[in-house]
Length: 296
Image (tube, rainbow, N blue to C red; front, side, top):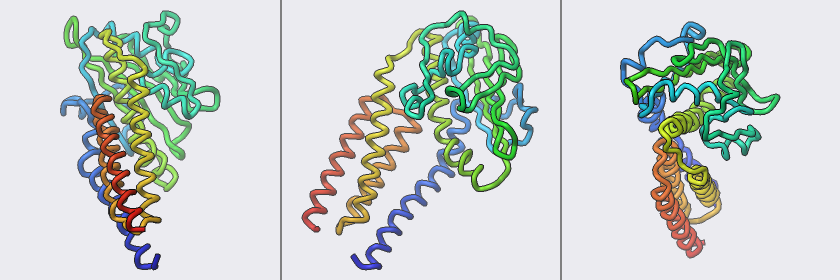
């Protein structure tokens, strides 16, 4: 392989990443930071806002729940590792040792939350939140982080009653950190997307539990497995770009895989649709390898 040929491959990969970054910044970021909210909710002042008045990052997300506020509140106050979990992707969280086990019932012994209590994200040594403010049945303010040097954040849950059998769950997160490379990498790059994926699932999990429509954990397992399969296909495609003569074919597969992964993470389609998408990616990989082997 000549230096010019290798350079073209690298430029192709960089071009793909630049397109993805631009698409995220221009189309996805604003959408997911305000997922589910109305304008009045996004710009509303919430309890805990005064703790971080000028955040580097702020997200406000909302979901309508067909259950009264009094039925939603118990699911909030029992959250936490070693408590009732976070109603999100337990299997994914436990891959990094969080030891999360989400309950499908209201646990009476976890209902007496008070200011100063810890809401842990994992066992000892893992990050945790401290209850900064609590207004039973209405709002819960959590504070995380040690100092602004490395980053602090608030995680605020507000329940608005919409009537006897309907309510609105609004979740706001604010981050404040010193603008340096390590903090930007941690909060702006690594945390922002992961937080949306997990928080969206948590809010849906609370909604389903309060409404009594919870899906099985097997469904969540398959969904995460599909994401991992897409990521693996993307990795294989990138490696193939560097070693195959017909490198533009795996580049096309990498583009397809990246688009599908973005769709899976941000839209989280039904599992059956996700299976169909991954079958399409596997078919494209087979096509790329068969054509590449003929040209190698």
